[in-house]
Length: 99
Image 1 (cartoon, rainbow, N blue to C red):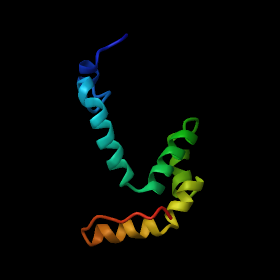
Image 2 (image 1 turned 90 degrees about the vertical axis):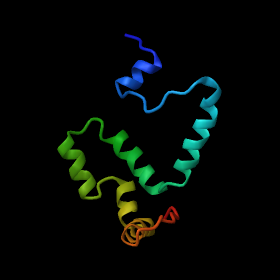
Image 3 (image 1 turned 120 degrees about the vertical axis):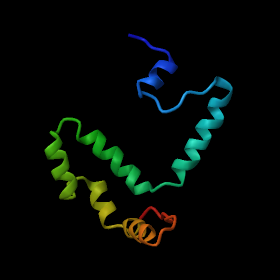
């Protein structure tokens, strides 16, 4: 059945609901925040989500753990992975390079 935005929000299907005049501004805020994020992690998330749809949970997790997805292998061997861990340990914001 169809539901309005407020109901979708109550059910947890959407994170936020905004009036039309605020929507473009909020979309740009979210886009800017995403642009500051870790590009290799975002690529890995998209690949794993797309390519694991037909796998069992256990098989998807096995492929992640064994670097069976190309973007996961790239991520685990990247300077960004080391930067993320170091920034966390040093309690600072990471500086992502995308490699």
